Length: 82
Image (cartoon, rainbow, N blue to C red):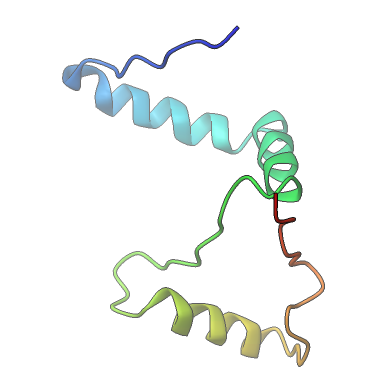
């Protein structure tokens, strides 16, 4: 059974955002995200708030700073094509 998402009332957004931030730091949320990534159901885009740079240039800089010469780095996997 699928449950339809209902957006919160705009007046509830500040509290909703705070709750989401708290939830995203839990082990359960990290497990769900890890499973989604491994299943190829999401895209990770490296972003730095306030930095006027493209996602590609930020990713390249992160890869460079990690000292890795491999592409893709070992932590990255290509999602399966379905």
